[in-house]
Length: 350
Ligand SMILES: NC(=O)c1ccc[n+]([C@@H]2O[C@H](COP(=O)([O-])OP(=O)(O)OC[C@H]3O[C@@H](n4cnc5c(N)ncnc54)[C@H](OP(=O)(O)O)[C@@H]3O)[C@@H](O)[C@H]2O)c1
Image 1: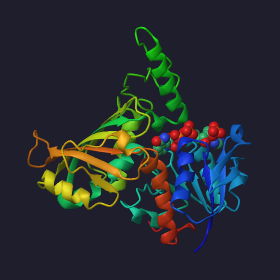
Image 2: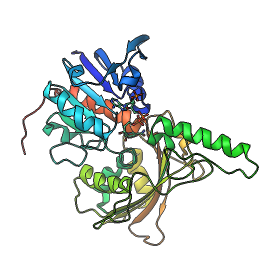
Image 3: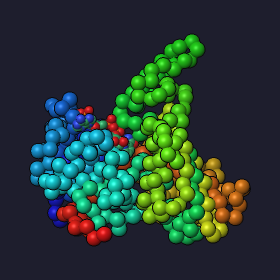
Image 4: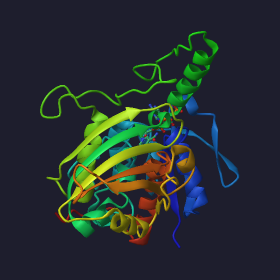
């Protein structure tokens, strides 16, 4: 089997560390690992298969000889460096939001729309963490009964905002516990204190057009869902909320179909979807603590939407945002590229 030189851009971050762990766990055929980060991290190392691998500065020249780049250093860095890597012959799997809605960039959830990989031009985008977990099983239910509307409310953990956000939750919580009135403090990363609180504001607000008043996190979920499912006219709406949970995003989802789909039928469809675990008992619902560190998407509380009993369903979806929502999906995309012999850039067919 061929082996590849793999660069992890953002190797010292939360997603980058998971990427390295998952490459190792899944025994991805890595010939050489190149961990890349900012200048600040030069001198540090990452562990890979028991070796300490030095972190290099993420400069364009660092991509010479690289076959695959797994990028998670933020949108501005991907905007600048992904084309540099592609120019040098690499395929980039990008975890940031920068390229997701570009028409020539496939937006892929492995196992859901792998066909989109065939037309890649060197860059493949990984969706937002809350979109990725929603997609598992949604396509199968669309095929079973025809999706007509999706309504999502998210409960997103602080790790979705990076390693400093996890520190902020710890500080804010311990500060609050030490105060007589339990008042949380510190909000450097979040717009309000996150300890003992929740914040209906992730990413910036859209201030004009039809989406005015939504946050960009919400519009990402809406527009990425339509692109991945190739249903540009599907009505989707979302409210995204940050909650004081370290790892694991949860979603309350209402789905409407063209044809009736009972909770039992939906449960059977989901149970046959790879990588989805469906609760068998009412009280066996998943929580973020159950999902953290694990690969599947967990679904529970599947029930009729009593305001639309014929064709509406409510459900609860939980997953590890750092794994299925980012690093695991990126590595699965790399595996699919290897399997389909798509590591070399393909000419556009559209
Ligand atoms: N967290 C999630 O659940 C999640 C899910 C999906 C997508 N994403 C996306 O993945 C990206 C990273 O998220 P994260 O949670 O891993 O963030 P993070 O923990 O804050 O890590 C950021 C990484 O980017 C590197 N970096 C920052 N500035 C850089 C620069 N100028 N040049 C090169 N590298 C630089 C950092 O290196 P230093 O350590 O040297 O600063 C670090 O390795 C973001 O775009 C995020 O939206 C995150």
